[in-house]
Length: 165
Image 1 (spheres, rainbow, N blue to C red):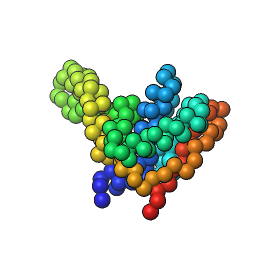
Image 2 (image 1 turned 45 degrees about the vertical axis):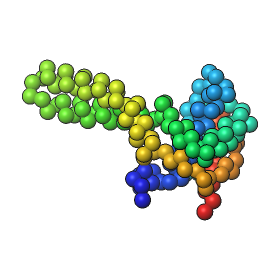
Image 3 (image 1 turned 135 degrees about the vertical axis):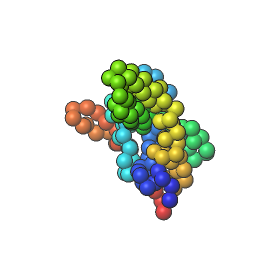
Image 4 (image 1 turned 30 degrees about the vertical axis):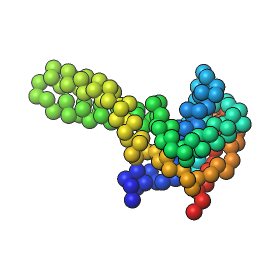
C-alpha cells in the first residue's frame, strides 16, 4: 500500500487531486476569484461565493483532464501542504539550532534554518503533494453533487464524490 494511502487514505488523496484541478480551472474561468478549499473522504468544500454551475463545469473538466493523464493538475502551488512542509522544516531547524553552545550562534542558526525551511517549502511541498497528499488516478471516481451552502454566514460550495468499486 502506498505511503500516502496509509497516511491520508486513497479517497482523500483522490479528492485532494480533484480539488486542485477544480481550483486551477475555476480561477482561470473567473480571474480574481479568492477562495480556499479543503478535501475529505466524501469530496471537498470550496470556501467562496461562487456559482455552482461554474464549479460543476470546473469539476467535470478537472476530472476529465486528470483521467486523460494531466497529473500536473493535481499539484497546486498554494496548497496547504507546502505551508505545512515549510513550517515543519523551519521548526526542526530552529530546534536543532537551539543545541548550539553560544547564544548568538543559536539565534543566527534559528533564523537561517527558518529562512531555509520557508525557501524549501514550495519545491519540497510539491514533491509531498505528488507522492503523498494527492492521487491523480481518478478512473473510479465520479462527481455525485455540487451544492451551495451557508457556513458561518459565508457561502461555500460542497462537492461530493464517490468511487465506483
